[in-house]
Image (cartoon, rainbow, N blue to C red; front, side):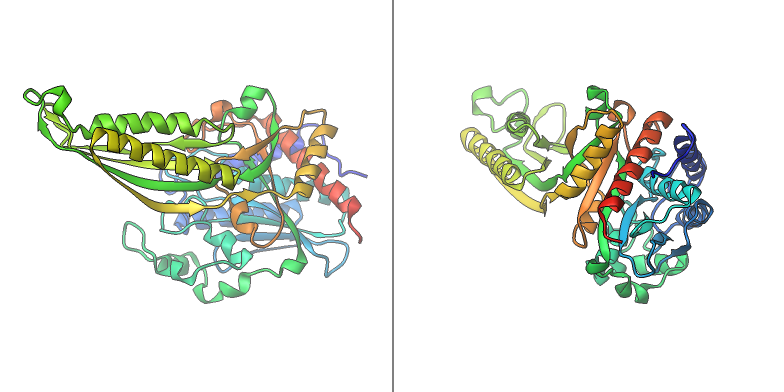
Length: 418
């Protein structure tokens, strides 16, 4: 029989935990909880207590700061289904990004414990740290450690205050020398599930509380430099100008057009610098960035190639010099078809139309995919706002998301061999 709970308790308990974590910050006036900071340690201890109170059989903070709560399966050597997300934040953050996935997992354990139910597999609730890539030149180090892909060179990176990752980890109470053994045995892991706010407006547009993630977008980034010739704004005729800004402007519009050519690709010029940037001087140089993403690698690469070729064509026609420098390329990370199905069927059982959509943002699930199959459930957030104090998901939507997660897990359990 499914684990039971009152009609609103799962959402209410999750909301209470979210609000408790919102109050733990490095900054007195906003939510800023950077990886390995004092507030990260305080939040990890708070999550540890939440996991214990919810019914986890064992809880620990591992060598890299991840909080790990285990709810044992029927057999002592049962494989584990992992549920997690992160508790670090960006600066001046919202209250739901990452932490929602952690408290959702805690809510599942709490419901099972209250029902006196054990599953054929162990549940592990994971509260990772280094997801936001804010403090150190690292990303997903906590989840990479469990997946067995942690790069030890990461420990030598430093933050803006000159503090090394290694020293910060020691100050946190971690153990740099014990990171390697954190890697899990893939044969003992069933999969990884993550609940996360959408960080986009699609679910709100579709009037749906949740959606099933198909893939985490691959991404390509470029630095582009356009060089023309600076000149006097009043004396150089229009036909004789080599204006780097007008050339770059045409390129930006081409990025917008080509980024929208396929239904699920996106392309963004996020940063643009003009020189000499004077009111009476024709711009001689422009530097801008390109961020190009999509859930299908072939489509994304075709878009990248088309954008780069369009920029070269514009540069040649306008007789300006063009340099395009790649600085980041990551493949798309598809979600497990079977876990997508399990989540979609649970959504349908709750009388909600299953909507499949890609994730344009990165998540710990990307790192965990190197270890095991992954699945993600998105939760509607108001106006798609994230990384902002205005970030919000309703208690009702959170309640439904946790119930759907629990439903999916119980149906996975019914299909397992105990």
